Amino acid sequence: MQGTLILAILNVKSSYAQEVEESLERDDDIPDTLQWWIGTESAWRIKTFALDHDIHVYSVGPGNEALVQLALDNNTKHYGDVIACQHVLQLTDCEDSEEVQKLFHSIGLASRLEVAPGRFAFWKPDDAKYSTQSQPKR
Image (cartoon, rainbow, N blue to C red; front, side, top):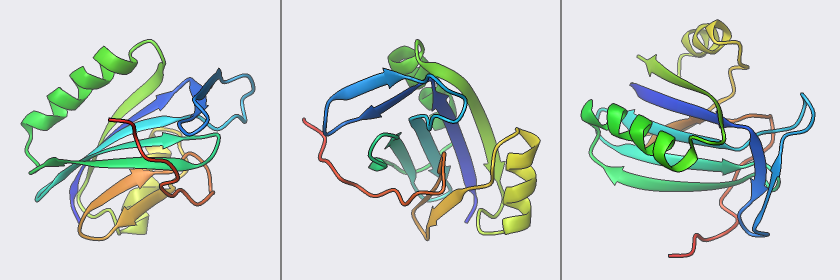
């Protein structure tokens, strides 16, 4: 599965269900992330919440190159004050562990890429299991 992963690592840790957000205090604190997977067939917005390993995944329609800039602009507009770092990663095969390891090593991150086959891939900030535990308020 090929695509572009936009990975914004935030300088906060939060729980959507508990409506809590805290600053990262120690180097080993697990951060929240905001990610976009832009694949050849579809695109997804993925938000991880560190305090309870919650994940919210939204389909944003078909994938296309114009979404990369839209995603970057959206991240800056809505999360610019809490983005610690941001990466745009091109993956030719997100299920190739050697490619994934080299790519994440090149930016100083562990290669913890989780793949939902045929849908999206996202980076996990730790080795815990991430699953949807709360429903966004609309």
